[in-house]
Length: 157
Image 1 (cartoon, one colour):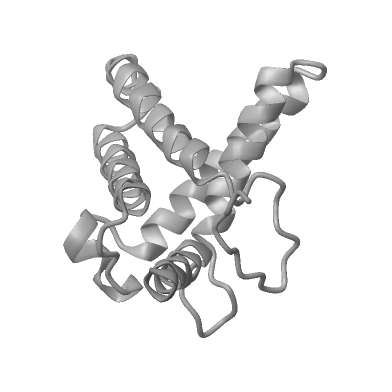
Image 2 (cartoon, helix red, strand yellow):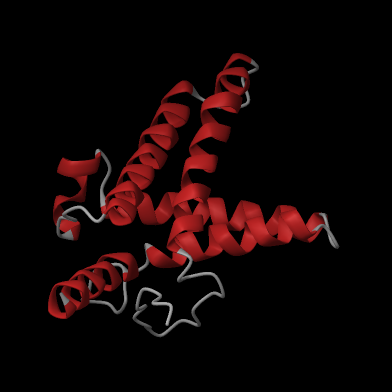
């Protein structure tokens, strides 16, 4: 029997690839690599302010670091401590991931029939969903799912 990580559901409809944690971690790393490659030229051409480029790279590095902890089975801090541990707050991660998901969906919409663009949009949308709160007073989906997954592993060992 194959185990998949449990995912809590809030009021929104959960995206298809929400439990594909390995691919979500790879997607975050890919988004970071794309930014690190593209942003210097965009800043040089005047299409992006240096401060905004720095902020977006810092935030995506934080998202990648969070997913690295999840995928390696490390200790994940509570959401208020994300900034201290990862270098960006939960709110910054949420806003950045939501913005990236919107761009990915727009690109997939312009490239109708392109399976790679559609899959990328699904993955980035699922990544963003994992950073959304389960409900108004709870932490993000990934934090609660991960904590539950760790509890299940301890219980079954």
